[in-house]
Length: 252
Image 1 (tube, rainbow, N blue to C red):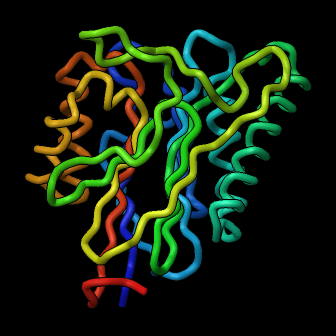
Image 2 (image 1 turned 90 degrees about the vertical axis):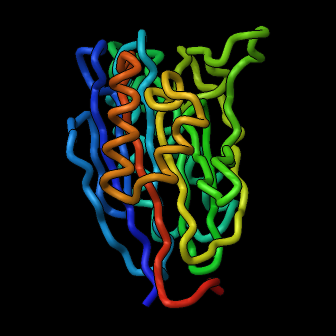
Image 3 (image 1 turned 45 degrees about the horizontal axis):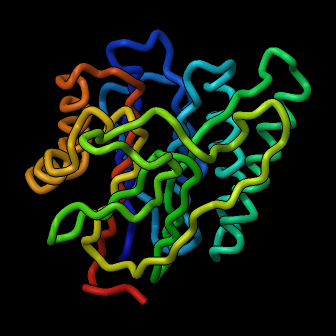
């Protein structure tokens, strides 16, 4: 039997007072909650399975509200996300939902969130993002980013930036988005890391790759979180490890 494992963890880090990150795995959502112990869920491979993280934009009101709205909408749309077009439409609806909520409550004006994730289908993976949260493919040749950062060009010698060029919400008036959505083949044994920049900003990609090579599932998620904490834990840390298991080498 073919199946998908999702191991998730979310933590505020060492500096932030609140966790403004949210996460969705199938019908399960985790919003503004602390889970120092990784949680592993197992799903049968078949119907579309959405796994995503949303990072509420710091320094603006209602980041946790925006991120929760995004993942709850994705959870409800999840079973219908069977194509790139369906994913793009769902993300655009999420964007509308964030702006609509801010319009109803003036204290939430300019709230916004990034989002990144994947929809697991029987023979392929739909990778998507808006903003700078990431999806990384843990290949045998090393960690490979398959999402596209919506960030301005970095000056020489600088590896990170807190600026984003696109988000769900985030402005005082409605702004349309152009989601990044791509399709990748799926194979038994493949692993993907979906995470907010609270992990990728303080921890270099080669360090993430080393930890994923050394550990599986819950231990890997714990060690990834620990690496961000040891690097100062400057931001909320949310991650989900997607694994595909089963009895055949390829799916389809």
